Structures are given as structure tokens and as C-alpha cells.
Amino acid sequence: MANLPSVEKRHRQSLKRNARNVQKRTQVKTAVKKLRDAIAKKDAAKAKEALREAASVLSKAASKGVLTDRNVSRRIGRLSKAVHGLGAAK
Image (cartoon, rainbow, N blue to C red):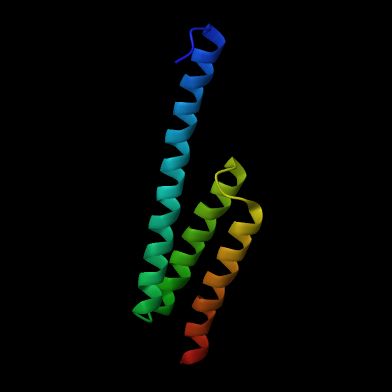
């Protein structure tokens, strides 16, 4: 590790940011997993609620720079399509 104070500070900052990003990515994975579980059970009401939660978590991750905007937009679109497909299947 470097001996300069500014480099040591940068390293500390990078560790904090990495931990924060890992936490956000984990939240995204959990929200998407809950949504996919609701879709698999064909529970439309639960899936719509989970979609709202997942879209919120994904958007927050994009605003923090953890995920790119295009990536989030694509994921939300695909998840929305799957949820709305449940309503049409009835």
C-alpha cells in the first residue's frame, strides 16, 4: 500500500464505496428474486407489488451509479412484460 496520505484516503474511500455498491447490488438481486418467485407462482397481485418494489430498488441503484441507466431500463421492461403477461393469461 502507498505511503502518501492522499492515496491512503483514496483507498479508504474506495473500500467504503465498494461495500455500499455490494449492498445495493444485493438489494437488487433480492427484489428481483422475490418478483420472479411471485411470477412463478402466477400470483398477479403479489407480482405487481413486487414489481413496484423491484423497479424502485433498480432505479435507486441507477441513480447511485451502481448500475447503468440502460441496464436498469432493460431489466424493468422485461420484468414488467412478465408481470403483465400474468394478467393476460387469465
